Amino acid sequence: MRGARAFDRGGGALGLPRPARRRAGESVVPMINVVFLLLIFFLMTAEIAPPPPLEVAPPAAEAPPAPGGEAALHVAADGRLAYRDARGEGVWPALADREGEAALPLRADAALPAAELARLLGRLAAAGVGEVDLAVVAR
Image 1 (spheres, one colour):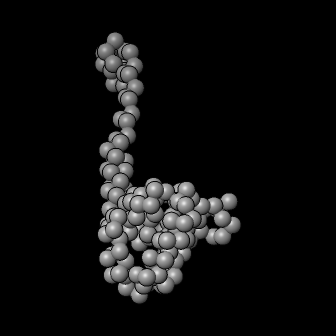
Image 2 (cartoon, rainbow, N blue to C red):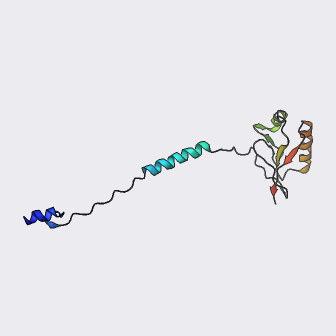
Image 3 (cartoon, rainbow, N blue to C red):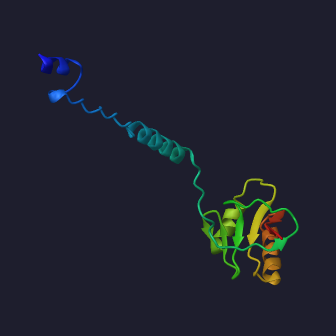
């Protein structure tokens, strides 16, 4: 009878206490689901900008930088031209299709000779571009 009483008091066989139950660990599955949903949300709402068509290092100036972007005319140091999807001489028909935009953003490389830039500005004026914003970087 003593053995039965020891067992009734919560002890195990031979009167030894039962081992404490381990707490079940918290599941990380809900956290993984939330992170996965956030990843999908940010990928769907992000605006992925294409890289610039030409690597251009604008000249330094004390004026605020002009807005660039994909609608800018890019001029490399060697005189290569890019405007939106057009390259080389193909930029001139693309510039003729511009719809009454105010000023054409121009991103010219700092190493572009001034004579080349002046020739380009004359050709832009002949193509009907009345105003040009030259993009610069702050000093």
